[in-house]
Image 1: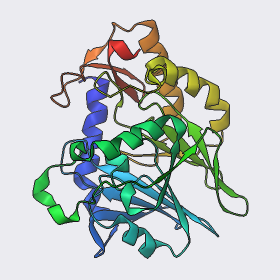
Image 2: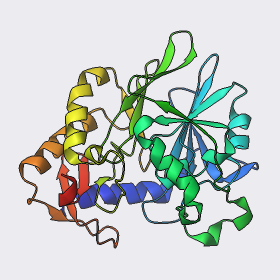
Image 3: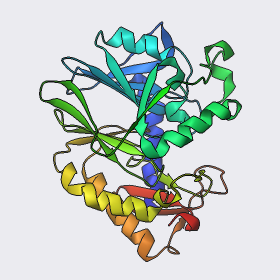
Length: 302
């Protein structure tokens, strides 16, 4: 069995067993499973099961002494704002790791959303095309629980922006292009946890031609991903564990170096790949797997 298939088998086993792990479900939003971080009770991981292969998504809530930070808003099904207000009594900010609909469709529940400046025009476009929003299979949710996509304030941020949650507690925004032009990862300096979005996870990072690229197309390539990751590696020396937006949490920092090696392998030998057939998508056919890292890519996005 190919290494990438072994990795995906582990991810599938994780998905099938997650409901057996200790969690809570709140009446205010029964679509989300709430997991308390094993090492820090002030961090919660919010799991939305999309009932579709590989599509379940994580949101993360970090509570500091003075403020809290919600990372991503998922598909926009159910009362996410009410759930967050149940979990913390602190004022909180909301930040998107990137604009894709499984991470941002719940934004309209909140008055203000932070995102990297390169994804601002992509988010603004979602207001114009709300009827094209991403939704999981309809059988398991009530239509009335889908949050309408309506305009909200978008606050443009850049690499290095810090969300200060209390004294000596900052969460740093690190721009990470490739999967999305304005993709971000967020480093909690107090805990050493890296919330790595869709950039670095235990399932493949997707850098494919199907993703739109009308704005900042130079950021939607494997090369942009490689160059940025290489540059910021010194800033990531304090990372203890990675908490992505999909599949398994608490990943080893070794994923960072493996991902850098995977990018370099694609750039050096783009025609040396395996066929990716995990999902029936004609745009997701080429996969490179180096160590723990996997990238599904299109030749047009190298």
